[in-house]
Image 1 (cartoon, rainbow, N blue to C red):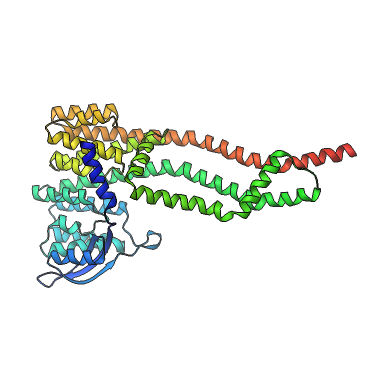
Image 2: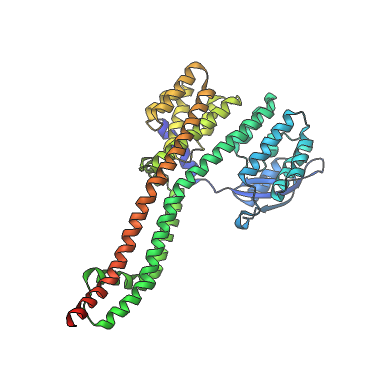
Length: 419
């Protein structure tokens, strides 16, 4: 039953319209100009949402994609801004003055524009969570809901500090996982590119030389030359098929729920890489759960949010099933154990936290442990992958070199015998 509900929700999400970020300029009921960002599927919907807020729309434009990321706000800059804001609020600095100081202290124009876009509605009496919510690209629903909880509970500085720590650790974890995937992928890409260049540009030179000899070629050399001739005649397929396959994979993954589910399941079972993906997802789940519990977010609401941020359908289904179990009065750990997705140690530790009323503490400890596991796995994977990839590259290039020099060796042998 839980799976059916989750599949339905995932299907709706997969088939839903693609959201676009728009920048807007509008006037409120008092005539004050407000700027910010809004997320909507179309320009018309964006204008409608702004009018529902009681704003008189002056302009709405699709946010341009900056070249080389020069006009965007980096995650590291956001973490610093949140941490500084927490420190100033804790020191008793008024909210408006704190944002003005942040804007003055920043040497990044995009950051200054974002801070000013948040500050303007705050000056007009809008809650801080709603002001941050104007920038959905940088502050997701989790961030905004935690900020609202901290504001209402009078612990805004504490929540901001927790959010800064959370985003900092999430960014570090994301970089580790990306580096784990990037290294082997980049080496394999270079290997394929080098092989293609040799086959298309270098081998034909040798083939032309061999034809001038008028002698029959060794089987290996003939096979390489035949492959080279095919690649030269169909170069558009050589380069076009991988690009088309990658595009088709991304589109199918985005649109086809069944395909996406199979890929996500396979990703968790891949040797070494699957361990990195799973441990990273567990660390993120536990860190987010601890942060939301610290902010006083109800466990059901926390699990609902957590079921949408793992980027893996198998884990999302496990978390959604846990949410339904909690609604029935059960434990999260019991449901996660039944799913057989989460590692037994993580489930056991979370179960202890549930029974002792210390979910926040235990979830934090589990997150720390699995972040360390990701570190160790990435380091071990890099150590193992490097010699394996070098051996594969050596075999491929070595085979091509041997194939090209075999006729030359045979020709030299014939000349020697004739002499």
